[in-house]
Length: 219
View 1: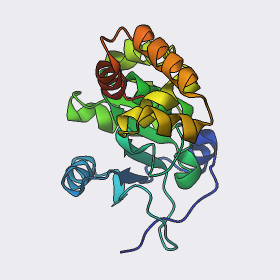
View 2: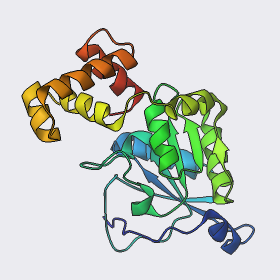
View 3: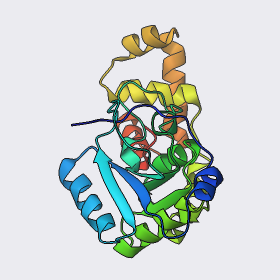
View 4: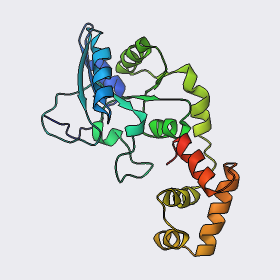
């Protein structure tokens, strides 16, 4: 299977300007679950003006034709071992249409940080994704109305980077001493960060704080 090589990102207006009226729009679908990836491909191929290919996230290769728009599941924006700000677009280059839900404001924020031009609610009618793809292919933005409030919430995540790091390590099962060692902090400082994070997200305890942050898509 031919996989995708890293491409230089082209501004959306450049790609739109190069494409003539009636030309096919080239789409790449990126999803980590093969069954859902195949379903998205079939949905998009129902529009005979779309030329659709697919790949798993993180794949890399040498012989893949150019693509106009990349449709990606929001959960794939952060690849294995990447930090929260790691730009998915740096690997794929094309304008992004990201699929997510209002319940995951952190994923929405990552999509925004990755330079996504399109944000589509996973619970939207199928035609909305096709509309979003055509809109983004013209270099225009598409924001599903159902995601607007969640996007604003994602822009004001209450935790600092350090507080989020402490919770993320705790979510991995790391004890207090290990968290302190990995972050080069004292145990007392780690406890203070943990207590502050619990208070900020309105949690009852550490386990509840981890659940709230994970449900929001921040880790």
